[in-house]
Structures are given as structure tokens and as C-alpha cells.
Amino acid sequence: MDGRKKGGGFRYVGALAAVSLVIAGVVTHTVNPLWRQVGLFFIALGLAGLLTLYLRQNGLFDHPLIQKLDYLFRDRGDENLDVYTKIGVSVYLLALLYVLVRFNLRIMPDQIIFLGVFAAALIGKTRKFLSNWVPFVVLIFAYDSMRGIADNTGFPVNYLPLIHAEKLLFLGNLPTINLQEMFYTAGVTRWYDVLAMNVYFLHFTPAIIFAGYLWAKKNQLFLHFRDAMILVSYAALVTFLLYPAAPPWLSHEEGFIQEELHRIRVEIETGYMPATVNTIYFLATSNPVAAMPSLHAAYPFLVFIYARKMWGGRGNVFILLPLAVGLSAVYMGEHYVIDLLAGFIYATAAYRIIGDGGTEVDPRG
Image 1 (cartoon, rainbow, N blue to C red):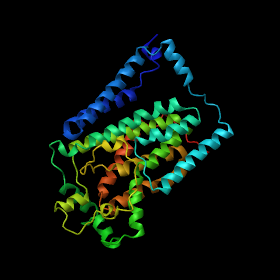
Image 2: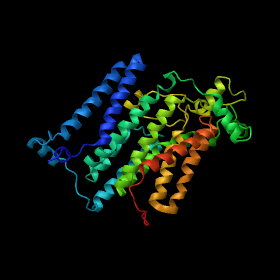
Image 3: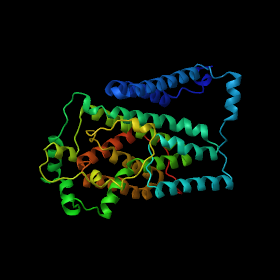
């Protein structure tokens, strides 16, 4: 019997997630002295994951006691859900949507597991959900943790090249400046300012909702979409490390943009910014020079690409998502248009590399 059969399959994505968690722990431990214990925790968690995968690979989970526990938690088959289960899942999702809207909450990556596992349990797919989603969440969390060192690698932060490229693309103009001159007044918060700020944060949550739909409807396409999101994230990370790029607001603060420019999100966020529930994700470090490429553009554009694969021409409506998020990012001074175009290119490249497994368009959606 080969290791694949003995151990239930060596999950390469799971192994990558565990390794990434170890690397994120090393980075956290090294870069931020205040978080050394957190870094050690990440390292221990990653090593525990690798040990678990090793034991599974070598058939050490085949003990009769483990098999009995495995049977108790085994997922149900792929039979159609009964009406009561459908009602239960629908009520749960509607209640979740109500809470998110009512309290203006934003879902963080690690909270996907906590929120999604209940719906998965209702349909008898808990193990499948955890198997498919935990590596994804860990990899995204590890990416966010490592992203914070992009301005500490010794490479100079790029200011002028992006400004020059933007002006070349727009005949000497900076779209951020033009939009703010037309629509923004300092000290005055208009409805579209609040709308733009909230749309700006729609780069990740809609992608996760879309991934959840694919997981429920077409698991194979979900796996490809998931892996494309992971690939585009780590491709962007490498770019951040090698080419730290300042967004418009930072270039203005450092004097490279002389015209008046506002970081609208910061100026109006008190009382308007979506609230969050603090979980382990907040240990990840942010990075002000991780602007090129824009993942605010890349993630929604991946949704558009796979929506077209899922629904054909009807999926074209999803182009509104990356365009809306991108327009908001430019208006608020968070990104140049050139950052968005790079995000679109990275997303397209990730799709081409990962592919869709030959999934056919479902004429019924």
C-alpha cells in the first residue's frame, strides 16, 4: 500500500500552509521584538501541522481508535439536502447577513472558519469544509503576516516611478488629484465618501462569499479559485519584497506629490469605518508600501474571471466589482491606476497558471 492510500493522501496545500505558518512565525519573531512569543506560537503551530501531515502520510492515523473517531465525524454523502436542512442553512445565512449589515461588521480571513463551519455542519460537510478551507485561511494569514516586512528588506521605497508612470498614462494628470478636486471637500463627509470607503473594503469579503458558493456548487472550480487566490497573494508578496511601492497618500506625505491630496479613509473613518471583531488576524502587520500590485483589484478581478467561467456571458456583470473597488481606491488616495492594472494582470496570470480544471459553464448557474 503506498503512502497516499495509507495516510489518506498527502495534502500539498496543507503542507504549504504549515510551512508558510512557520515562515510567518520566524518573520514575526525576528522583525517585531514585541511579538516574539506570537512568532514562536506560529512556528509551533506550523510544525504541529507538518507533524500531523507526516503521521497521516505514513499511515499512523490508521489505529482502530482513530478510525472509530473518524467514523463518528464522517461527512454525509453528496445526496440532495432535505427541505429542513435547506431551511436551516438559509436561516443561518440570513441571520449572519443581518448581523453583518446591522452592526456594520467586516469579516476577517481567520473568521471564515468560525462562521463557515456552522453552515458546513448543517449540511454534513464539516470535514470537507475544514480540509478545503483551513489551508487557504492559514496561507492568507501567513501572507498578511509576512507582507509587513516589505519595507524592512533594504530595498528602497519607490515613489517617483509610479508617479511618472501614472502621469504618462493620463497625459500628465494624476487621477487621484482630479477626483478629489471634483468631489472631496476637507472637513465635509458626503454620502459618496462613506460609500467609497465601504466599497474599498469589498475586495476580500465578496471573494470569500463567491468562493463559498463555488464550494457548495462546484467543488473542483472552488479548489482552482482558492489556489489562484493563494498564488496571486504570494506573487504579490514577492513583488512587495523586491519592489516596495508607495501609494499616493504616502508620496504626498513625503513631498513627492506637491498638489493637495487627502487620505480620505483616515479623515472620515471615525464613525463610518466598518467595525471588526478582533481575532488572531490582527496580529498580522500592515505595510504602507505594499501597493504594487493592488490586491484590492486582483481579488475582485479573480471573482470576475471565474464568474465568467461559471456563468458565461452573464458573469460579465461581475466586472463592476473590481471597477468599483478600484475607483474607490484611487479616489481615496490608496492606489494609483497603475497599481490596479498590475492587480488585473496578476489575477489573469494566476488564473492562466492554475486554470479551472476544464470545468464547463453551467447554463443554469
